[in-house]
Image 1 (cartoon, rainbow, N blue to C red):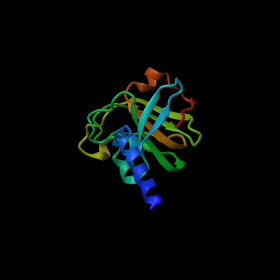
Image 2 (image 1 turned 120 degrees about the horizontal axis):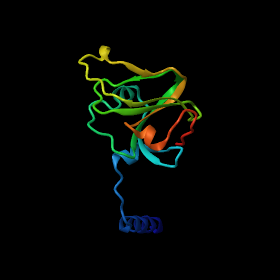
Image 3 (image 1 turned 60 degrees about the vertical axis):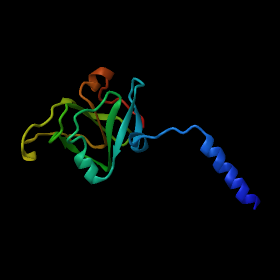
Image 4 (image 1 turned 90 degrees about the horizontal axis):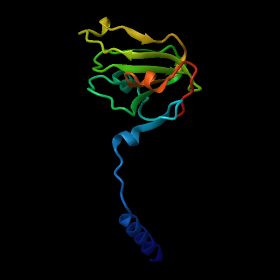
Length: 150
């Protein structure tokens, strides 16, 4: 009986506390800190299907947002812009989260067939790839060898 009263009291206290709604982005996101201290909320992509879709069919990527792709193993992972509607900055990071390759202001591919879209990157071993709004590399002064944290 005493246990039931304690559980009921705890439930009442919790229900009276201020509630903050958590958005899906916050639930599935990860804060990435750039070398200049800027924090980016990045959607994390780990499942192969999600990684293939990436930024396809999206009309925008707001400032302060990004997409972080986590590959199971380091490799030479190239990316493309098929069905991506906005320019992106693409940053490849090694397992220590050091920038090993970049593609600034990568243009969308307007081709009807994915075969007609160029690939970017994949020249260095990387385990993580971060996509940011076009112009972010220049705006934040990101350069090869910089370390990001997440």
